[in-house]
Structures are given as structure tokens and as C-alpha cells.
Length: 294
Image 1 (tube, rainbow, N blue to C red):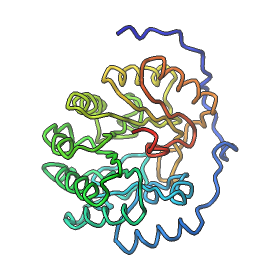
Image 2: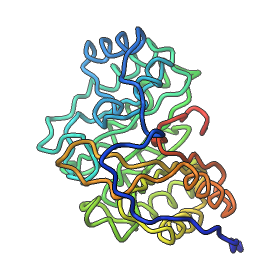
Image 3: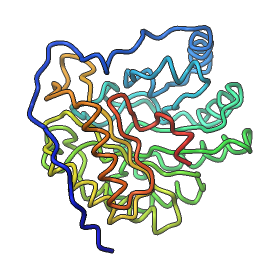
């Protein structure tokens, strides 16, 4: 397929700011539904990426009755420079966790359930068995709910990927996160090629595929476009592009705040390249408006 297109000129000069621009300001979390969901999550000893990753859209999503569950515990074996999820030695697997996730999804009356996890590199299958159990439990209690999984790279273990694929989620997501040049700094225990291989193999195994990329970490315009080209070569279905926000002072700093107009241009380029659905904007996160991506 010829994907040659005329690309618009984007201004990507670093623009360091002490304060967030207006387009990145959101209200503090609150509301009755927000409080109820938070209480329920704690009562079921469940974790959400909404809280752990300090998502700016948490209030909007929770008050709309949607959330992204984290399985395999709340402690990650990796130390990515952008992520607020804690790193350390994880506790043993909780085999009752899939049931509690399914019950929470039912209690929330979810139309679309998103499930993600920490990396469990100490496990031979990376936690894939718990993944399959969770998908099956959610589907059993919520037969009309579509299921999206945001999986780790399993260190390139395609047998682990197959365990997840066999459980037949409706959408399989694995985030690219950044451009390959920045992997050593942003995602030191990951490999860009692992991500491309996983997305390609998942597609070949019948999955609808999705990935997300953060902007504002020091990438160039040319690198972003090349990543989109690489993803198109894997026959990707859905791409999300959003602004990186530094969760704490101990994480990677923001290189620049990307203007909404630039996000709009990248969306245009992604669609022109042949990616079927592109969600692109400063506050976009991998699970934002996820129900539309199925």
C-alpha cells in the first residue's frame, strides 16, 4: 500500500512553561458518582489506572460511570520514567481479583470495560493467566459489556499473548508510549520492536488493535510521523495521542506543551496514512472515550 502523503509543516519548537496552558486545566475530582465509585473500589480492594496514573480525566469518566481497572496488583516490576504507578516487588497473585473486577463492572453497569495491569516480569507468563480469567469473569457477569484490554508487552512472549487472545477481548490495546529514540529514558525495560511485534501478531491472530503515544517528552515531528507509519504497517485499528504530564517532580519533566492545533494535524496525518480511528488531543489518554473505539 502506498502511504505517501503531503505532510503539513508543524511547529515543534520546545516551549518550556512553569504553568500549564489553559487547554490543560481541568476541575479537581468530585461529584456524587465519583465518591461512590471510589468507595466501591476500596471495598473490593481494587485499583484503577485512573487513580494510580493520576489521570486528568478521572472526574469526567467516573461521573459517567466508567473506569479502567488495574489487575495483577498495584506494584509494577518496571520503572518507566513517566508512570506514577509504584515500582517494587509485587505481592503474590490474587486469584480472586478477577471475580471482584467482574462484580465491580456489574455494579457500575458498564457498557464498555477497560482492563489494564502492571508489569509482572517476575512471572513466566507475565500474569497472562490472570488476564484470561478476568476477561472470562467480566464476560460471564456482564454479557452485554464490551471488553478492552490494555496489556503489557510480556517481554515479547507470544505464548503469553495467545493466552489473552484466546479469551477473546473485543479490543486489544498495548501502548507504544513514545518514539524509539526516547525508549531508553522513558521506557528503559521495554523495547520498541516488542511493541510493534505484539501489535502485528495480535492483529494476525484476529484482534482489533489499539495503541497510544504521549507527546511532549522531547520527540520531533518527524519521529512522531515515523511512528505512525510503523504502526500503520502493523495494520493498527485505533491510535490515541495525548500530552505527557509529569506526575511528580521525580518523574521525567515535560519538554513542551503541545498545542491542540498540532494534535489536530497529527490526527489528520494518521487518518491520511490509513489508521482507521485516531483520537488526538492534549487530554486524551489511552482509555479516554474508549467506548467509541470498539
